[in-house]
Each structure stands twice: as C-alpha cells, then as structure tokens.
Length: 267
Ligand code: KIV
Image (tube, rainbow, N blue to C red; front, side, top):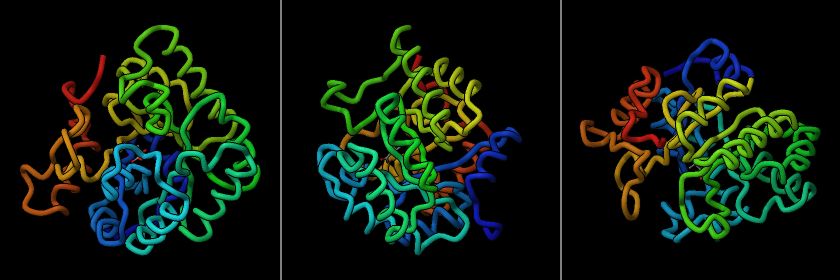
C-alpha cells in the first residue's frame, strides 16, 4: 500500500469521518514493513516487548534504551503508518523526566507520538509534554505497568465508581492535550461512552467494537505469544497462508467491524 504518511490530523479526521483506525504492535523492521504494506494505520512499539520479545513476566523491566532501540528498528521498516512508542515503567515519574525520555524516543527512536499509562496523576506530565511539542497517547483501563497495584491483569471499570473514574480520567487527558487514547480491558458500554464523549480517537483492546480503532499485540494475533492467548485477541493466522495475509485479514476485520466480536469483549 502506498499513500500519504499518516499523521495526528489524518487520524483525527478518520474518527470524524467514521472510519476505523487499525493498530498493531511491532518491534523490528521486518514486521514493521509487513504491517505497513498490509495497511495498518498505527504501529505501536509497546512495552509488551518485555513479555513477547524478552520473555519477561511483565512489562516492568523494560528500559528506555530498549524502547529506543526497538522504535528505531520499527521506524526503518515503515513508510505510511504512524509510529507510537511507549514510555516504559518509571521513565515518566516527573514531568521533566518524561520530557527527557520522550525526547529520546522521538530523536533517537523516531517515534511520532509517545504513549504513557495512567489518568489524573499524568495530567501535569501530559500538559508539559504537549507544551514541548510532543504528541501524547494516554492509556486507561487495565494499565499493565500498574499490574502489582491492580492485583493482576483484570477487566477494569465494571462498577459505577470505577467506570466514572475512568470517564473522568479520559476527559482530563484529552483536556491536557492528549491526541489519542488506548482503552484496555473495559466493558463495551463504558468504552462506547468514552468514545462518544471524546473528540480524540479512542483505540480499544478488549474494549468492544464501538471504539474508533483497535490494537492487538502482534504476537497474540499471530498466535505465537508465550502462554494463553487473551480472550480479547483472535488468531488471524489460522486462516491465512502467511503473516502478511493474516495482518490484511485483521485490517479488514477491524474496518468492517467484524473484529472484535462479542466473544472478544467484556460486559
Ligand atoms: O505495550 C503494548 O503493547 C500496549 C498495547 C497492549 C496497547 O500497550
């Protein structure tokens, strides 16, 4: 696929025009090229690389140096897709530290946007980054860097109090200048409400079909991840001859709304 490189504004326009944004993770140049050629809009260099590349039990051990390295590899493989790279655990504990590390992800890793986890606690940091010219993607719901506080990888926002807190946090991140939001493992009805209340694109993972776009960990949808494939993922390799075809099937399924189905979503 050859067309104009995507940007913050073209992703926003996609939401405004009712189009679905497709996103997958990648960690190297070869997969980045496959995703780019299959028409994936956003490539996320997620700190999930700690689990799927490094074989760690969580994302917590991942360092800024490692994120920079993988982001730079992915940047070399793509032409059209928009590149988002995660700030890893403890790399944005203060606004100044966040700025220093976001600068590394952008200047050395060629990221076009950085993603960070958390809500109200991150508002000041998001505002600081945006003031400095750094596009920011928020991440709410199940936030894997806080797995030890959450007590495991669990669906979030199931009761009224926590659902209202996530809505409030989503609005606060948008007001602070975030340009995109990832919502992970929340009930479909909550994701729908947030998606309709925000102007910025909301990308879901285990958040139902109503979001403005979908993201999956590449190795989950290729069915080569360690352990059990999460409920919210689907094996796109099972009916494909090669990886490129599996990714094309994912792009088509997200665009037509056939993925995620009910069985990949939470109530
Ligand atoms: O690290 C990652 O891959 C992510 C996605 C699961 C959204 O944050």
